Image (cartoon, rainbow, N blue to C red; front, side, top):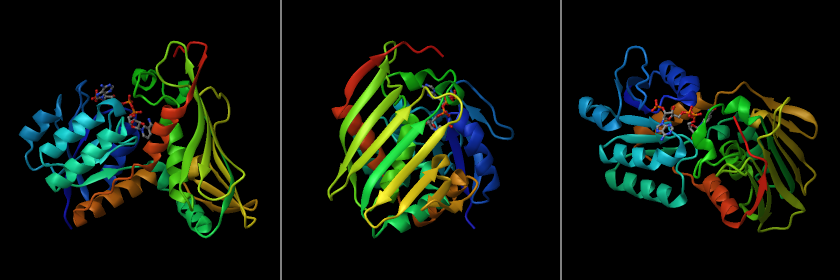
Length: 311
Ligand code: NAP
């Protein structure tokens, strides 16, 4: 079996929590180097302060995972593609749609694989919800994605600056489930984005969606001010009389009040299994649908202001 030599750019929380342990357990990959602007080290592999140094020192590197904040993802991804590397993009895959379009076109030109990862889609419950909804009509959908930003994003300044997505950083995970499971595309009809007066990214968002068929109500509530129990739920009612509740960020599915699927998270394991398959087939997988819904929310969203936020 081919073993792909991979490097990681950005040694922050998600790299430590997921990419490093998951790559270590996947025999299709060998971590051979990391690039960290702060010079963070990983046992057994060299650290480079800049990706360019990594590419020069390790010419047989096959691929990189870009795990930085979104504002700088395009620059790192383009540089990697130009160096002839395949690229896995953490979510969100870029700060803007036009950046992602540019990366997709450049990857094709370079004959390299570009992979946009949407980790919440890699849940058995999400796949089953998609299959159940495939031949139904969705009348109601209520997304409730409410968490405590101080618990999940302590000290992350980038998330509050322009292009950091704010509450859409977790909210885009819900949207990535929606674009995966809805039997017909949804689009944003109305949005209200609430900004702390000292931040350039929203702390809360209320969205209303529409779809081409008839429906009653399709909404999303994102809020980063929820302490105590955290909520990552999507409730759906279909015209055919089915009630679905996806909870725990897509890990659990109840159908008509009865537990249908509940599996411990295996998201990043499945992401790297998919990446290995794409690399073997030399095929890109670029999905911009969740990013488009976020971009549209910013395009048509009303701006509301709330009290300042301090970490
Ligand atoms: P983080 O802890 O802040 O780490 C990001 C890392 O990127 C930094 O530690 C830094 O590492 C590197 N970096 C390079 N250029 C940077 C710049 N200009 N500003 C700040 N950091 C820079 O963030 P994270 O939570 O790992 O999130 C990274 C991405 O993964 C985000 O897009 C996020 O949405 C996604 N994600 C996060 C989670 C999660 O649970 N945290 C889950 C899924 C997806 P070096 O100093 O080593 O270069």
